Length: 548
Image 1 (cartoon, rainbow, N blue to C red):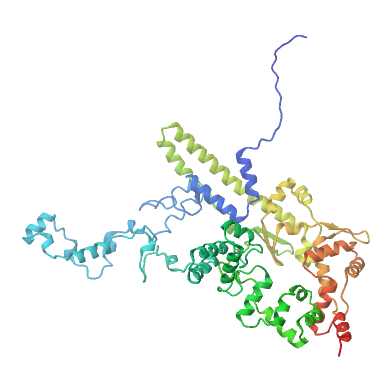
Image 2: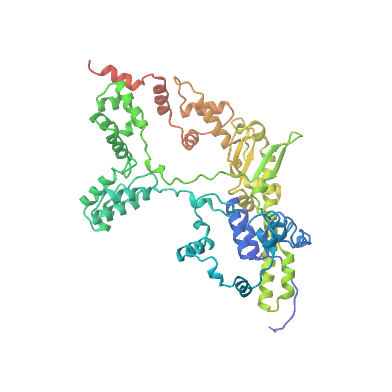
């Protein structure tokens, strides 16, 4: 077999995951908050990236304020709108400023000469004209010196726009700090303070300690009795019910604080499981009270705080900002538009790069700024492509689910990622990334984009399939409208749904009901009868068999 060399040309297609492509894919699945943080970080690292409307430098008098707009669209267009803020004094005309000074005299603008000329005119030294005491001189120097930071300003009014009001806002007290302050007063022994501080660090946001503190005693090298003694001290702190190990103990601490922890109330607190089941007959028998006293006791339990620790350092709830708005159109359709407030507005400063390229001589600097220009250009394109993709996916979702926007949840259709991906000619993974952490504001509320993708449930008569979310809505409607004297069981709900043309199994109904946190038919019957004041069958039987 002879060996030979030859040249061949082959044309192939391949997809290479470049860093820019990976960045574009990453941007698709970011929420608006994460995207804003990412863009902010890129602006800090890249000198050629600017926010739209920011000024690269103050405009010079006599020059156009829109200078440099050719390099980045809106860049520099608002250059003359920031006067009057910080640093505006550098551009103030002294002659114009002096015209506003009250009592301006001509001698104030006269040149008095150098220090030696003034001393020769006065026939004495400058320090002898208006001598100051050392204390006064020090006070004047301290008064004239500029503060190192805004937080050094004293109280009172200030015309400085950089006046920091946050320096005067009281810091939020956390639960751990609140308990530590009480621990310093209540406990004086160093060993008990050490145990107490360790236990305070174990308290969760709701104000509870772990149920088992054996590991704490072993880690601290203390006995279980010493740890239990400190726990008893911590449970006397404010707020009442703090540092409990379970709900019963938390309620018991609060009842002792109110001097209402009698034997009957103790029995009720120790059987909270029966209270959750609304087993009134068993509770009345265990507590040894009549119906009226039991109702009063349950009312007191409801007025207690099961999570006392949430009063301190509660986390701030972040409001959902929609990425897409859907509004009714004039022709009866729907208008889909992006929320411009959630889209980062960044521009490439081409003028700055052109100026730098004329002065840079080193190859390393040229390579660095070339990379910065390339990355900035790619980021702007990736953000634009992200916005277009979100709008395209949202428009297709609205087209597929037009019945939902017109008639409500009952008309929500089954939809999967493949149907949307095929319609807009994209991959399913792209649609999945776009719909993650994105929200749509509609006339029926704000929904996550993934809300509109639901599984399908077959129709009983062989017609069009039903959406799982629409079926959940019908199950909730059936349960909400049921008669207290005729509670619907899961089997009855299945029959009602099949009459409506929905083929569904009983276990699916039970799964949907539990997902919506709807109790079983037995529990619902007890709850509704207790609300109406009608005794349940079990309570009636126990009352009939009770001795006179």
